[in-house]
Amino acid sequence: MRGDGANRMNKRRLAGAILALVMMGAIAYLGYLHWGGSGHNPSDEVLAQMPADASAVLYIDLDALRQSPFLAELYKWAPQPKADADYSQFLQSTGFNYERDLNRVSITLLNSGKDTILFAVAEGRFDREKISAYALQTGTRENHGGKEIFSVPQNGSARRIAFTFLRSDRIALTNGSNFEASLSAPHEDAESRAWRERFRRLAGAPVFAVVRQGAAAGTALSSQTPRGLQSPQLSALIDQLQWITAAGKPEGDHLRVVLEGEGAKDAPTRQLSEVLNGLLLLAQAGLSDQKMRQQLQPDVREAYLEILKSADVSLIDRRDTKSVRLMFDLTPKFLEAARAAMPIAPVAPQNKALPNKGTIRN
Image (cartoon, rainbow, N blue to C red):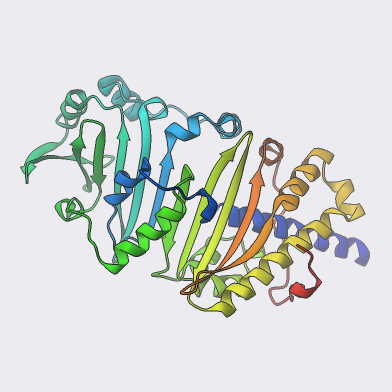
Protein backbone atom coordinates (compact mmCIF):
# COMPACT_ATOMS: atom_id res chain seq x y z
CA MET A 1 0.00 0.00 0.00
CA ARG A 2 2.81 2.36 0.87
CA GLY A 3 4.46 1.65 -2.51
CA ASP A 4 1.22 2.42 -4.36
CA GLY A 5 0.98 5.71 -2.51
CA ALA A 6 4.52 6.61 -3.52
CA ASN A 7 3.79 5.75 -7.14
CA ARG A 8 0.70 7.96 -7.11
CA MET A 9 2.78 10.78 -5.61
CA ASN A 10 5.47 10.35 -8.29
CA LYS A 11 2.81 10.48 -11.00
CA ARG A 12 1.41 13.66 -9.52
CA ARG A 13 4.87 15.22 -9.36
CA LEU A 14 5.50 14.32 -12.98
CA ALA A 15 2.15 15.77 -13.98
CA GLY A 16 3.09 18.90 -12.07
CA ALA A 17 6.40 19.19 -13.91
CA ILE A 18 4.70 18.80 -17.29
CA LEU A 19 1.94 21.26 -16.40
CA ALA A 20 4.48 23.76 -15.07
CA LEU A 21 6.31 23.73 -18.41
CA VAL A 22 3.07 24.15 -20.35
CA MET A 23 1.97 26.99 -18.07
CA MET A 24 5.28 28.76 -18.56
CA GLY A 25 4.66 28.49 -22.27
CA ALA A 26 1.39 30.31 -21.73
CA ILE A 27 2.87 33.18 -19.75
CA ALA A 28 1.67 33.40 -22.15
CA TYR A 29 1.92 33.85 -23.59
CA LEU A 30 10.13 35.57 -25.53
CA GLY A 31 12.42 37.40 -27.70
CA TYR A 32 13.95 35.38 -30.51
CA LEU A 33 16.70 37.58 -31.95
CA HIS A 34 16.83 35.82 -35.29
CA TRP A 35 13.24 36.88 -35.99
CA GLY A 36 14.17 40.56 -35.90
CA GLY A 37 14.43 42.13 -39.34
CA SER A 38 15.40 45.43 -40.88
CA GLY A 39 13.24 47.93 -42.69
CA HIS A 40 9.56 48.67 -42.20
CA ASN A 41 7.48 46.15 -40.31
CA PRO A 42 3.64 46.16 -40.16
CA SER A 43 3.83 46.28 -36.36
CA ASP A 44 5.88 49.50 -36.25
CA GLU A 45 3.08 52.05 -36.59
CA VAL A 46 0.63 50.15 -34.39
CA LEU A 47 3.18 49.74 -31.59
CA ALA A 48 4.37 53.35 -31.91
CA GLN A 49 1.14 54.47 -30.21
CA MET A 50 1.76 52.37 -27.09
CA PRO A 51 2.23 54.46 -23.90
CA ALA A 52 5.72 54.28 -22.39
CA ASP A 53 4.33 53.78 -18.87
CA ALA A 54 2.72 50.47 -19.85
CA SER A 55 3.06 47.40 -17.67
CA ALA A 56 2.45 44.93 -20.53
CA VAL A 57 1.93 44.96 -24.30
CA LEU A 58 0.37 42.20 -26.42
CA TYR A 59 0.67 42.24 -30.22
CA ILE A 60 -1.19 39.94 -32.65
CA ASP A 61 -0.85 39.98 -36.44
CA LEU A 62 -4.01 38.21 -37.63
CA ASP A 63 -3.05 38.57 -41.30
CA ALA A 64 0.12 36.55 -40.76
CA LEU A 65 -1.58 33.95 -38.56
CA ARG A 66 -4.36 33.30 -41.08
CA GLN A 67 -1.73 31.98 -43.49
CA SER A 68 -0.50 29.42 -40.97
CA PRO A 69 -1.69 25.78 -40.96
CA PHE A 70 -1.17 25.84 -37.18
CA LEU A 71 -3.94 28.43 -36.76
CA ALA A 72 -6.40 26.07 -38.43
CA GLU A 73 -5.36 23.35 -35.98
CA LEU A 74 -5.74 25.79 -33.09
CA TYR A 75 -9.25 26.78 -34.20
CA LYS A 76 -10.24 23.10 -34.32
CA TRP A 77 -8.84 22.57 -30.81
CA ALA A 78 -10.20 25.69 -29.12
CA PRO A 79 -13.72 25.53 -27.64
CA GLN A 80 -16.27 27.32 -29.79
CA PRO A 81 -17.90 30.15 -27.80
CA LYS A 82 -21.64 30.63 -27.92
CA ALA A 83 -22.86 33.45 -30.09
CA ASP A 84 -23.19 36.65 -28.07
CA ALA A 85 -26.35 38.63 -28.76
CA ASP A 86 -24.63 42.01 -28.46
CA TYR A 87 -21.80 40.98 -30.79
CA SER A 88 -24.28 39.53 -33.28
CA GLN A 89 -26.13 42.87 -33.30
CA PHE A 90 -22.81 44.75 -33.68
CA LEU A 91 -21.82 42.51 -36.62
CA GLN A 92 -25.17 43.00 -38.31
CA SER A 93 -25.14 46.78 -37.85
CA THR A 94 -21.48 47.46 -38.74
CA GLY A 95 -20.52 44.56 -41.01
CA PHE A 96 -17.29 44.13 -39.01
CA ASN A 97 -16.28 40.55 -38.20
CA TYR A 98 -13.00 40.40 -36.28
CA GLU A 99 -12.23 36.87 -37.53
CA ARG A 100 -12.28 38.18 -41.10
CA ASP A 101 -11.71 41.95 -40.96
CA LEU A 102 -9.20 42.52 -38.14
CA ASN A 103 -5.63 42.65 -39.52
CA ARG A 104 -3.49 43.39 -36.47
CA VAL A 105 -3.95 44.71 -32.94
CA SER A 106 -1.74 45.92 -30.13
CA ILE A 107 -3.12 45.95 -26.58
CA THR A 108 -1.48 47.80 -23.71
CA LEU A 109 -2.21 47.33 -20.01
CA LEU A 110 -1.46 50.17 -17.60
CA ASN A 111 -1.71 50.10 -13.83
CA SER A 112 -3.78 52.91 -12.33
CA GLY A 113 -4.09 52.30 -8.62
CA LYS A 114 -6.34 49.30 -8.15
CA ASP A 115 -7.62 49.55 -11.73
CA THR A 116 -6.08 48.25 -14.94
CA ILE A 117 -6.40 50.57 -17.92
CA LEU A 118 -6.57 49.08 -21.40
CA PHE A 119 -5.38 50.98 -24.46
CA ALA A 120 -5.51 49.32 -27.88
CA VAL A 121 -4.77 50.19 -31.49
CA ALA A 122 -6.31 48.00 -34.19
CA GLU A 123 -5.95 47.92 -37.95
CA GLY A 124 -8.52 46.33 -40.22
CA ARG A 125 -11.33 46.81 -42.67
CA PHE A 126 -13.70 49.22 -40.93
CA ASP A 127 -16.87 50.84 -42.25
CA ARG A 128 -16.44 54.17 -40.48
CA GLU A 129 -19.94 55.44 -41.23
CA LYS A 130 -21.69 52.30 -39.95
CA ILE A 131 -19.50 52.01 -36.83
CA SER A 132 -20.03 55.69 -35.97
CA ALA A 133 -23.80 55.38 -36.38
CA TYR A 134 -23.85 52.24 -34.22
CA ALA A 135 -21.85 53.97 -31.46
CA LEU A 136 -24.22 56.94 -31.40
CA GLN A 137 -27.20 54.67 -30.68
CA THR A 138 -26.07 54.46 -27.05
CA GLY A 139 -23.04 56.75 -26.87
CA THR A 140 -21.84 60.29 -27.49
CA ARG A 141 -19.43 62.05 -29.86
CA GLU A 142 -17.09 64.97 -29.17
CA ASN A 143 -14.38 66.73 -31.16
CA HIS A 144 -10.95 67.13 -29.55
CA GLY A 145 -7.87 68.27 -31.38
CA GLY A 146 -9.42 67.56 -34.75
CA LYS A 147 -10.41 64.01 -33.79
CA GLU A 148 -13.90 62.59 -33.34
CA ILE A 149 -13.94 60.76 -30.01
CA PHE A 150 -16.83 58.42 -29.36
CA SER A 151 -17.78 57.26 -25.87
CA VAL A 152 -20.05 54.25 -25.34
CA PRO A 153 -21.24 52.39 -22.20
CA GLN A 154 -19.27 49.29 -21.25
CA ASN A 155 -21.62 46.31 -21.00
CA GLY A 156 -24.39 48.41 -19.53
CA SER A 157 -22.23 49.56 -16.60
CA ALA A 158 -21.28 53.05 -15.50
CA ARG A 159 -17.84 52.64 -17.07
CA ARG A 160 -17.31 53.70 -20.67
CA ILE A 161 -15.09 52.89 -23.62
CA ALA A 162 -13.78 55.71 -25.81
CA PHE A 163 -12.54 55.23 -29.36
CA THR A 164 -11.48 57.27 -32.34
CA PHE A 165 -10.48 56.67 -35.95
CA LEU A 166 -6.78 57.45 -36.41
CA ARG A 167 -7.36 56.84 -40.11
CA SER A 168 -9.89 54.86 -42.16
CA ASP A 169 -8.27 51.50 -41.37
CA ARG A 170 -7.01 52.20 -37.85
CA ILE A 171 -8.88 52.65 -34.55
CA ALA A 172 -7.63 53.49 -31.05
CA LEU A 173 -9.72 52.73 -27.98
CA THR A 174 -9.43 52.76 -24.20
CA ASN A 175 -11.42 52.28 -21.02
CA GLY A 176 -9.36 55.00 -19.32
CA SER A 177 -10.39 58.58 -18.66
CA ASN A 178 -7.38 60.37 -20.23
CA PHE A 179 -7.74 59.33 -23.85
CA GLU A 180 -6.22 62.47 -25.35
CA ALA A 181 -2.95 61.95 -23.49
CA SER A 182 -2.71 58.42 -24.87
CA LEU A 183 -3.13 59.79 -28.40
CA SER A 184 -0.24 62.26 -28.10
CA ALA A 185 2.89 61.87 -30.20
CA PRO A 186 5.27 59.06 -29.13
CA HIS A 187 7.87 60.07 -26.56
CA GLU A 188 11.61 59.85 -27.17
CA ASP A 189 12.69 59.10 -23.61
CA ALA A 190 14.65 56.17 -22.18
CA GLU A 191 11.51 54.18 -21.30
CA SER A 192 10.11 54.46 -24.82
CA ARG A 193 13.44 53.38 -26.30
CA ALA A 194 13.53 50.37 -23.96
CA TRP A 195 10.10 49.25 -25.18
CA ARG A 196 11.04 49.77 -28.84
CA GLU A 197 14.21 47.72 -28.41
CA ARG A 198 12.18 44.71 -27.25
CA PHE A 199 9.60 45.22 -30.00
CA ARG A 200 12.48 45.23 -32.51
CA ARG A 201 13.77 41.90 -31.23
CA LEU A 202 10.34 40.34 -31.67
CA ALA A 203 9.47 41.99 -34.98
CA GLY A 204 9.31 38.75 -36.99
CA ALA A 205 6.83 37.02 -34.67
CA PRO A 206 3.11 37.49 -35.44
CA VAL A 207 2.23 37.00 -31.76
CA PHE A 208 4.22 38.39 -28.86
CA ALA A 209 3.89 39.89 -25.41
CA VAL A 210 6.26 42.13 -23.46
CA VAL A 211 5.91 42.56 -19.70
CA ARG A 212 7.87 45.14 -17.74
CA GLN A 213 8.51 44.25 -14.14
CA GLY A 214 6.91 47.11 -12.28
CA ALA A 215 5.33 44.62 -9.89
CA ALA A 216 6.03 41.12 -8.60
CA ALA A 217 5.08 39.02 -11.63
CA GLY A 218 6.36 35.83 -10.03
CA THR A 219 4.23 36.37 -6.94
CA ALA A 220 1.21 37.22 -9.09
CA LEU A 221 1.74 34.08 -11.16
CA SER A 222 2.04 31.95 -8.04
CA SER A 223 -1.25 33.33 -6.69
CA GLN A 224 -3.02 32.19 -9.89
CA THR A 225 -1.34 28.77 -9.96
CA PRO A 226 -3.03 25.69 -8.44
CA ARG A 227 -1.60 24.97 -5.01
CA GLY A 228 0.13 21.75 -6.01
CA LEU A 229 2.00 23.53 -8.84
CA GLN A 230 3.24 26.53 -6.87
CA SER A 231 7.01 26.97 -6.56
CA PRO A 232 8.24 29.72 -4.21
CA GLN A 233 11.74 29.31 -5.67
CA LEU A 234 10.52 29.90 -9.22
CA SER A 235 8.32 32.84 -8.17
CA ALA A 236 11.20 34.51 -6.31
CA LEU A 237 13.48 34.21 -9.36
CA ILE A 238 10.86 35.61 -11.73
CA ASP A 239 10.34 38.56 -9.37
CA GLN A 240 14.01 39.51 -9.89
CA LEU A 241 13.61 39.87 -13.66
CA GLN A 242 13.16 43.30 -15.23
CA TRP A 243 11.46 42.13 -18.42
CA ILE A 244 9.54 39.03 -19.47
CA THR A 245 8.78 38.48 -23.14
CA ALA A 246 6.94 35.76 -25.02
CA ALA A 247 6.67 35.11 -28.75
CA GLY A 248 5.02 32.57 -31.01
CA LYS A 249 5.92 32.00 -34.64
CA PRO A 250 4.15 29.42 -36.83
CA GLU A 251 6.49 27.15 -38.73
CA GLY A 252 4.46 24.79 -40.89
CA ASP A 253 1.94 22.93 -38.75
CA HIS A 254 3.62 23.76 -35.44
CA LEU A 255 4.20 26.90 -33.35
CA ARG A 256 7.67 27.79 -32.12
CA VAL A 257 7.28 29.36 -28.66
CA VAL A 258 10.13 31.42 -27.21
CA LEU A 259 10.07 32.66 -23.62
CA GLU A 260 12.72 34.97 -22.19
CA GLY A 261 13.36 36.48 -18.79
CA GLU A 262 15.72 39.46 -18.71
CA GLY A 263 17.43 41.17 -15.77
CA ALA A 264 20.43 43.25 -14.83
CA LYS A 265 22.11 40.56 -12.72
CA ASP A 266 23.66 37.31 -13.87
CA ALA A 267 22.91 35.13 -10.82
CA PRO A 268 19.07 35.09 -11.01
CA THR A 269 19.04 34.17 -14.71
CA ARG A 270 21.56 31.36 -14.16
CA GLN A 271 19.51 30.01 -11.26
CA LEU A 272 16.33 30.25 -13.35
CA SER A 273 18.11 28.30 -16.10
CA GLU A 274 18.90 25.54 -13.59
CA VAL A 275 15.28 25.43 -12.40
CA LEU A 276 13.98 25.12 -15.97
CA ASN A 277 16.48 22.42 -16.83
CA GLY A 278 15.47 20.62 -13.65
CA LEU A 279 11.81 20.66 -14.64
CA LEU A 280 12.68 19.31 -18.08
CA LEU A 281 14.76 16.53 -16.57
CA LEU A 282 12.06 15.53 -14.10
CA ALA A 283 9.41 15.46 -16.82
CA GLN A 284 11.48 13.36 -19.21
CA ALA A 285 12.46 10.90 -16.49
CA GLY A 286 8.88 10.55 -15.32
CA LEU A 287 7.58 9.83 -18.82
CA SER A 288 9.99 6.91 -19.01
CA ASP A 289 8.60 5.39 -15.80
CA GLN A 290 6.78 2.10 -16.40
CA LYS A 291 3.81 3.11 -14.24
CA MET A 292 3.42 6.35 -16.21
CA ARG A 293 3.57 4.43 -19.49
CA GLN A 294 0.63 2.36 -18.29
CA GLN A 295 -1.31 5.41 -17.08
CA LEU A 296 -0.94 7.63 -20.15
CA GLN A 297 -2.32 6.82 -23.56
CA PRO A 298 0.54 6.29 -26.06
CA ASP A 299 -0.41 9.30 -28.20
CA VAL A 300 -0.63 11.59 -25.14
CA ARG A 301 2.76 10.41 -23.87
CA GLU A 302 4.24 10.92 -27.34
CA ALA A 303 2.85 14.46 -27.48
CA TYR A 304 4.47 15.33 -24.14
CA LEU A 305 7.77 13.82 -25.25
CA GLU A 306 7.59 15.79 -28.50
CA ILE A 307 7.48 19.06 -26.58
CA LEU A 308 10.22 18.04 -24.15
CA LYS A 309 12.55 16.90 -26.93
CA SER A 310 12.09 20.23 -28.73
CA ALA A 311 12.74 22.28 -25.57
CA ASP A 312 15.99 24.17 -25.21
CA VAL A 313 17.22 26.42 -22.39
CA SER A 314 19.98 28.94 -23.06
CA LEU A 315 21.63 31.98 -21.48
CA ILE A 316 22.12 35.27 -23.33
CA ASP A 317 24.55 38.05 -22.36
CA ARG A 318 23.60 41.44 -23.82
CA ARG A 319 26.19 43.26 -21.69
CA ASP A 320 23.73 45.55 -19.90
CA THR A 321 21.26 42.74 -19.30
CA LYS A 322 21.38 38.95 -18.85
CA SER A 323 18.64 36.64 -20.09
CA VAL A 324 17.47 33.06 -19.87
CA ARG A 325 15.57 31.73 -22.87
CA LEU A 326 13.27 28.71 -23.16
CA MET A 327 12.21 27.52 -26.62
CA PHE A 328 9.86 24.68 -27.51
CA ASP A 329 7.40 23.65 -30.22
CA LEU A 330 3.65 23.23 -29.90
CA THR A 331 2.43 20.66 -32.44
CA PRO A 332 -0.93 19.25 -33.58
CA LYS A 333 -0.14 16.16 -31.49
CA PHE A 334 -0.02 18.30 -28.36
CA LEU A 335 -3.28 20.06 -29.22
CA GLU A 336 -4.94 16.68 -29.64
CA ALA A 337 -3.50 15.49 -26.32
CA ALA A 338 -4.75 18.66 -24.62
CA ARG A 339 -8.31 17.69 -25.46
CA ALA A 340 -8.03 14.85 -22.95
CA ALA A 341 -8.58 15.50 -19.25
CA MET A 342 -5.54 17.04 -17.59
CA PRO A 343 -3.78 14.94 -14.90
CA ILE A 344 -4.59 15.52 -11.24
CA ALA A 345 -2.71 18.52 -9.86
CA PRO A 346 0.21 17.31 -7.74
CA VAL A 347 0.50 17.78 -4.00
CA ALA A 348 4.27 17.89 -3.78
CA PRO A 349 6.55 19.21 -1.02
CA GLN A 350 7.49 22.80 -1.73
CA ASN A 351 11.08 22.52 -0.51
CA LYS A 352 12.19 19.60 -2.66
CA ALA A 353 15.51 20.44 -4.34
CA LEU A 354 15.69 20.37 -8.11
CA PRO A 355 18.49 18.49 -9.88
CA ASN A 356 21.80 20.29 -10.19
CA LYS A 357 22.42 21.66 -13.67
CA GLY A 358 25.72 19.82 -13.79
CA THR A 359 23.82 16.54 -14.16
CA ILE A 360 21.73 17.78 -17.09
CA ARG A 361 22.51 17.29 -20.74
CA ASN A 362 21.03 19.91 -23.08
